Structure formats: structure tokens, C-alpha cells
Image 1 (cartoon, rainbow, N blue to C red):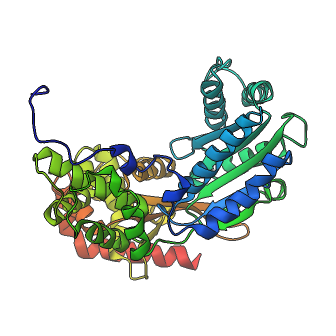
Image 2 (image 1 turned 135 degrees about the horizontal axis):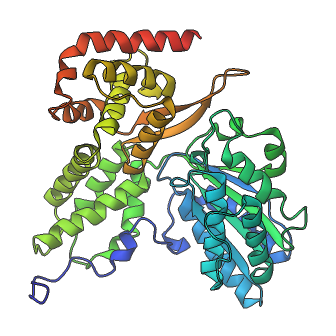
Length: 429
């Protein structure tokens, strides 16, 4: 089968429609202001000065990683031509649970980049020792460095009442140059979808980090179309019918202007054409690919979850579905109360609130929900807020197809009452 001659692929350079590919600045569309800001902030590096720290914020898929990646790659090359070493230490904080793990990830990233031994074990030594190893590697191999912390708002840490882990990390990295722990020039770029991210940062960290802000708004349909036009050479010149790019852009515009989703759909339509040995990508490939994306991302994943994760997701979806309040955001204290009610109705084991929150946060890795940290004001503490990226109703329906959980679907009116009673109590506290 592998050696069989099929029709030629519709692609000639598939990497161009991989969302994480760092592209040339000529292909960057609709982000002139943001590109100009990031360039101006980082330009001092080339002049032997320390650039400011930055906060890049805006919805998912709006070009934050793309812009910072493209600019820093250029600076790496320009510094190299001058005989200097500019280090780009880029990590995604989404899968990292603790400050200690984050520092170890930074050490690993630098060690891999410079071809050195990590030099510290993942466990069994203090976070302070990991910081020391990180600084040692940087001082040995880089003249200047930028830390890029993507999805930083998700690096919360384990203790809900403690200072968030991201606050401690920002404090340490942004002051490392001032304390001479890092001898060269240091800047920190934090990337987040949460516009209120800075509200939860400790005062010391806020003062030390003190970033310059760069806002990334949603792309509109015309910008999405231009983004796709600038990547159409991923395909053979004759492989795209005229209606493919406008249709992909229209679908992505409906998904809140997410360029990553547009590129995923563009690639998916091409893959579908290849699977069927079709000579070109047509409108029906786009529509079928979109249907598969919608179905696969939200529903197929649900089938493989454990019972406890299904219950946690069902309770959270029920709050979004039955809430009388506008929007579909779910405060974690309300979701947990509904989770307790559902487990009682099903006579199922009941996990702690921390475990419930952990389970729901894990689901953000599948794209089912997004998460953000919220404050209840002075003395009110912090909580997580969950927002569904798709329709929670379909998720609830799929979960109750599990015979162990189907009985809960019969309690619709009672569940609606429980949800709104818990929401009322939460917002009155």
C-alpha cells in the first residue's frame, strides 16, 4: 500500500499550512501595528541595550506566537551576523502544573538549544537549584535572552489561595538581570488570551515585570482570506478551486476570527482530497472537513473519558446550558456544587473540589473549553472560570449516551433548578 502509486498530492509544501510553522514576515497579514510594536520593543537588543518586557494579549489564533516568533528569529540571525548569541527560550505553560516544573522546562529548553546537559534532575532537588542551573546555562551560552511564556495564565500552581505560580516566575525572570544572576540582557514576553491577566499578579511581580502591552484583536473575514492567499503556495498551482479560500475564511470568521482554525481547515480540506486521490480541493472537501472538525473536537473525545471526567464535564456543561445569565461562563465553585448534586443522583464516587477543577482544566487541552483565573474581589479569593468553545448541549447529549450516566438526562427540570439556585447563591455572596 505504501509503495502504490496514487494520484499526486495536492500539496507541494504542506509545512506552510501547519499552524506552528514560523513564516517569513512577508506572509504576515493584518498585524502591521502589532509587528511594528514588537520590532520597536526588541530593536534595542541589536544596539546593545535591554529591551522592555512585553505582554501580548488577545483571543486564541490572533497571531501572538506568530509575531513574536518571526521577530525573534530575525534577531537571532542578525545577532549571529555580528558575532553575538541571542537566546530565545520559548515554552508553553498550558501543560505545566507547578512553578518547579516550569523552571525545569526552561532549563531543558535552553540545554537542548545549546547542546548541553540539563544538569539537574526533574525531581529531588529544589527549585532554587534549577534556577541556578538555568542562569548558568544562559550566562555560558547567550549574550542576551528573551523568555517567551505562552499561555502563561494557565500556570496557576497547585495551591488556590497562594500567589499564582506565573506571578512568581515573572518576578524571578524579570529581575534576574538586575540581581546579576543573569549577566546579559534579559526580557520577558508573556502571551495570554486573558485581557485581565495582570489583575491577579502580585504587586512585586507587577512592578518588576512592568510590561509594554501589545493587543491582538480577532481577524476579520478579509484578513483571514489574505492569510490563506499568502499560504496557497502550500498547494499545487492548479489544486485549489476558486471558492475554497473564501469558504475557509468564512468558516473561520464564524469561529471568532481564529487564524489557527482557518489554517487547520485549509490543511484538512487538502488532506481529505489526498485521502480520496482527488486532483483538486473543492468546496465539498472544505464542508466535509469542517463537519469532521466540529464533530471530532467536541464529541469523539468525550467517548474516551473516564466516568469521573464525564461527570465533571457534564456538570460544567449543565451550568452553561441551563444558566439564565448571559454568556456561557461557568464559575468553578458553581460547577463543583452541580457536580456534587450529579454524583449524589448517580450514587457515584465524589471527588474533591481540587480534583474536579483539575479534571475540567485537563479538558482545555482538547479544545472543549477555555479556562481563566478570576478574582472575587478583596478578601473573596480566586476561582477558575470555564467557557465552552462549542455547544455544551451536544456534549451533554453524548455523555448521557453512556449507560452509566443516562439516568441523569431524565432529571432535566430538577437540574435546571439546581444550576440556577447555585448561580444565584454564588453571585450574591
